[in-house]
Amino acid sequence: MLIPLSQINPQIRNISATFYPGVCVTVLAMRKSGKSWLVRALISADPRIKRILILDMMGEPEYKHLPTVDNIPALTAALDKRKHQDRFVLVFKFNLNDKNKKVTFDKVMKLAFAYKNLCVNIEECDAFCTPMTITEWWENLLRRGRHPEVTLFQSTQTPSTLNKLVIKQSEHLFIGMLNEANDYKYAFNQMPGHQEEILSLGKCQFLHQHEKVITSINTRLTA
Ligand SMILES: Nc1ncnc2c1ncn2[C@@H]1O[C@H](COP(=O)(O)OP(=O)(O)O)[C@@H](O)[C@H]1O
Ligand SMILES: [Mg+2]
Image: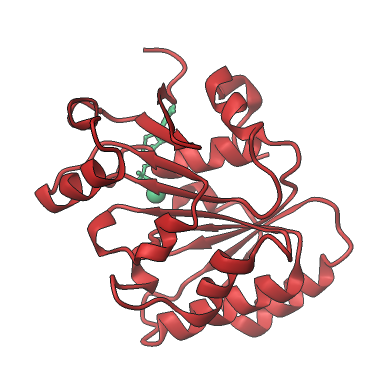
């Protein structure tokens, strides 16, 4: 478990109850606003999510104690070893000096597609797309990930640089505290009529959109 259930508020548990294998979730919020915490809580709250691959771009301290690999052959071997394992968490840590990050990322996405029954948490996902481009296997997972039962969690602090497909294919969208005018404009377009609420969001506060219903949540248990 990534976050103890005792620290997860009932609203988050209700949201997780609407997940099913192959669902796509996107979180848009500025750095240090609680994106990673929210995703880890959503994953922890859903008992059906048992096989988890975290793509760590930043070398997050929260993932230090988890089994970690940092190259494709090691990831292939680690996934093979867990092929019949019902429950695991594995971290793929990107090398900051990797000049071909997008190529490496796409290999990870291809492995995930072939592996099946996996939850992939892509942190800082804007590193792997532009408004005009997206990698081949990420696109395949977004469009057809339901078949191999690959659940995608995608988060970014720069929503305005995302590829359209990421949001279009997401059944769940979370918008948190932002800071750039461009990002606010983007957020307003995703949730028209909710400008005031978006502007007033603070750390650990999010608007959640699912099937056209928008609700606000505070992920912090105590105020
Ligand atoms: N709901 C929460 N309850 C307690 N601490 C939280 C919560 N959300 C975030 N934090 C803390 O706030 C800090 C920033 O959160 P994080 O999820 O890493 O932000 P981000 O991924 O947006 O940069 C972390 O130290 C994290 O532990
Ligand atoms: Mg983070």
